[in-house]
Structures are given as structure tokens and as C-alpha cells.
Image (cartoon, rainbow, N blue to C red; front, top):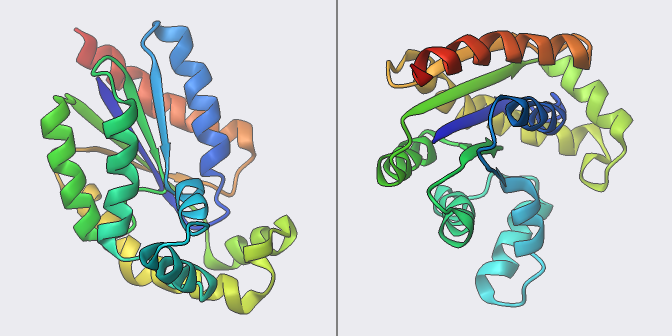
Amino acid sequence: MYAFIFMGRSGCGKGTQVALLQTFLATKDETPILHVESGPMFRDFILGEKFTNKHSREIYDNDDLQPSFLGCFMWSKALLEQATGNEHIIFDGVARTLVEAKVLETAFEFYGITKTFVINLEVTREWSEKRLLARGRADDASLEKIDKRLNWFEEDTMKAIEYYEKSPDYEYVAINGEQTIEKVHDAVRAFVEPLLSKTAK
């Protein structure tokens, strides 16, 4: 089992690159792939009527960072319900904080994941702002809303990225996300393919 963690500012194209990586991995072997994406899980969670759901909705509506315990709950629930022990796992939007990154390590140990690849799609703040405004999604309705998310990315998520970059336990790469989709995917493949071949031996 391998794990892949996609990180980067909002709008950097993580979802697109995850889909392309899934297609590429399918050409290498028949190992199933579990895609764990925190964003949709949170959007579903905040529709609930219990106290925690409603409070999480307030945080979401205010464009603040959800607490680490809820972030861990989201991907933990996905693993508990869907992991079979015989698949590669791709994480999208995980981990958003250093605390979450360290808790995720315990999941890797538990599931016996032998190698973790961290792919950081780097885009500037200005590029991200333009991309999100053009996307026109409800939670990208104004620059003020977008900037609040970009602020907590720089204050909190960057600590997790720096941790992955410095740790010898992860295969880390930073890729220029401001290229075409095809060029970004080529860079992801160039990073992943030789490491897959090396660890398979």
C-alpha cells in the first residue's frame, strides 16, 4: 500500500491532478485506489442538525479553519468505513494542520503503509485568488472570503507542508502548479514513477 498526499493553496488543481494520478496508477497495476477528500466530507457534515454539525457550519460560513479533531474525524471515518488493506490511498485536502499530519502518521503505521508521497502544488497567493474568483463557487464569492482561507493556509497548513518536506519518512516534491494541467501531471508522473519502481523491487 502506498499513500499520496496532495497539498497546495485553494484552487491549485489538486482534484484534477488526483484524477489524473488515479488513471496513471491504474496503468501500473490493478491495485484499488481509495480517494479521501476532506472538502466534500465537511460540506456534507455541516448539513447535519446536531450541535457539532451546526457549530462546524458556523466555522465554515465564516471561512475559518475547522479544528484538527474534526479534520481527523473526517478522514478517519473514511478509512474506517472504506479501507480494505489492499489499496493505495490518495488524500486530497489532508492534512490541514501540523497536528493533523502527526495524527495521520499513526494511521499510516496502523495500516502498514510502506511509502507516502507528498505532492505540493505550488501557486502564488495572487494566482490562487484569480483562479478562485473565476471559478465562481458559492464559497469563492468574494476576495474577502477567499483571503480568509488563504490566510489560514499560510498560518497553519504551511506548517504541515514544512514538516513533510523536512521529514525523512516522506517522499516530498514541490511542483509548479501554475503550468498547464498536462505539464503539472507530467511533473507528478516524473516524481512518482521512478519511486514506485524503486520501492516495488
